[in-house]
Image 1: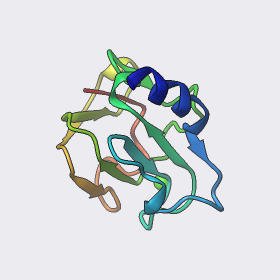
Image 2: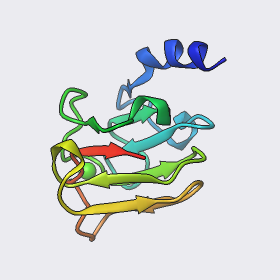
Image 3: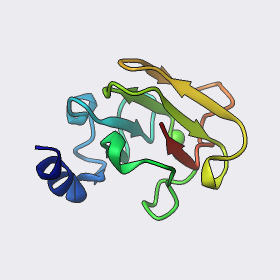
Length: 113
Ligand SMILES: [Ca+2]
C-alpha cells in the first residue's frame, strides 16, 4: 500500500496554480500553499518522502510557503534554511497554520518529521 502511494505521489508534488485549493490536500499528506487562501503553487508529500530532511529548493518551492496543512499523523517541522537548520516550527497532526504576518511567511526552505 505504501509503495503504491509513493509511486503515485511522485507526480503529485506540485499542482498547477489554477488547480490548487484545500481540496487538493489528500489524507495522510503534508501540504503547503504559496498563498494564504490555499491558492498559488501547492507542494504536497507523504511523510516518508520528507525524512530525514527534504529541501524545497529542487521542488521549486523555496521561500514560497504561506499556508500549511498537516494531514499526516506525524509532527512536521519546517525550517528557514536548508538541511533542516535555522529557526524551526512544529506543525502537529491535523494542524493548519497561516503564516501571513509571521516570521515563517515565504521563509521555509526545508521540512522533516
Ligand atoms: Ca507565499
